Image (tube, rainbow, N blue to C red):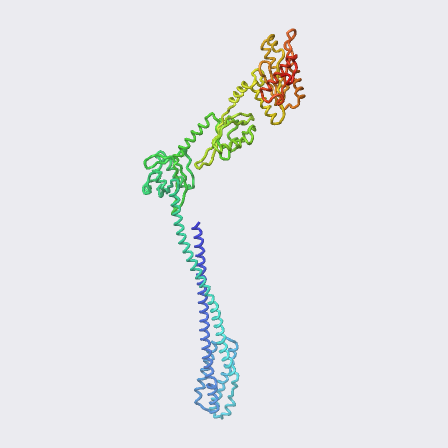
Length: 639
């Protein structure tokens, strides 16, 4: 990235310098051209002005009153033959000057003036020839002058035109030169831009050099950074070329293979490969350099390296490539996986043990999501593994435990790190099963909970045994009704319930009439059938929260909860008497069964179980004494 930015800056600087130098060269060339033009104008002006001035002065000298005209006048008026030579010389010089003047005039006015002057000069020459003849003839000056008089006004006017043209031409040329000088000075005033551009160019070059210096420092720092990164890398780093020469290693590589940095320069890459893999590695190495792209070497199940002591090391390799001086280099990151292999072996063993154990096990994360389980748990719940992964344990909720139960469970786990107890869970098919559950919190080195290990034990059979034992302990084996012990417990509960609601309950003590004769005539088997039949009839008449029990022999008890109305109790008792009156046997051997019932109310007749049982029992015996097949409520008179 830095090199790219630097190249952009360098390219921009070069373009700016080239443009600036081109502008300077153009400015210098233009300034030189303008100065050359001024010099040319100046030289041309000097040449033309000087030539015109010289020719005008010569023309004026040879023709004017100091020259031809003056000598011609004296020659005519004074008949001075000595002036002939002067006159002829002036004529000759004047003709030469006119011829030369033609080359230095450019305007039409000058050309017309010179032609006018030429005509006047030619007339003077003609008059001069006439004057010579007349002088030789001896005519008087007046006569000669009359014959040769010439009007020189046009010639003098032409000389004035030439003089004026010479002056104006010089002025015009000087004006052009002045304009050129002014233009050149104005153009030269832009020279300050050159100073600015030179300053900017110098600043740009200095900046580029500064960036180049900083870039070199940055590259050096980057190189040092890369060296530090390679040295600090947790993996062994080896840089090789296509020949297999080891060019660079880090300290981890030196520790892993046992070679020093200097010794590595004498070692080839294939020396770090076990002999049985070298041929295969050589083929792969050649292919890798033909198509260099980053990759991890997991083609084989196991990769091995060999250290200086010729010991094999299980390794993992990741390759990347770089270019240096147009040469492809391979960078190999090598990791010793000996510990990982051992850990994987232990994990496989642990996983196998966990999967083979008959105890159901579930692993949850800190958010109570199921992350793993064994086969026993799937068999226990009926769910498949993928159906439970990521689910909360509430998927097994049987709704037999309320929210308060689970809150208390997790509270204890938070306090003590574990919890053990019974939980009813619902299987996939909806069946409820009781489980003995042991939940343990798994913590990291900092004491933070990372997972929960949950062990399940199906206690269905245990519950069935407990239920059977409870049945034996609290229920009559023949009739299935509550026995005396359970009857007393239920009576105690009824009394507590009556106290809580400030009400009352009723206890019925029932004894069968004629049962002894049935046993004597028909046997105990028929007697048992009678007892079972009585139990069924009692279950039909009592309510769901009432209790019917067999106290022993042919004695039964019924507990009615919340019986404040004596009339209601009497209706139920009469119904019981009606149901418990039935024949046994047939014909001459038929016997009748009936019942005598005693009634006691709590708390009216007693505030204890023993007292209520006593009162109901006395009321029942009172009924038997007075004719049987009836009921009687306890009263003090009976007592």
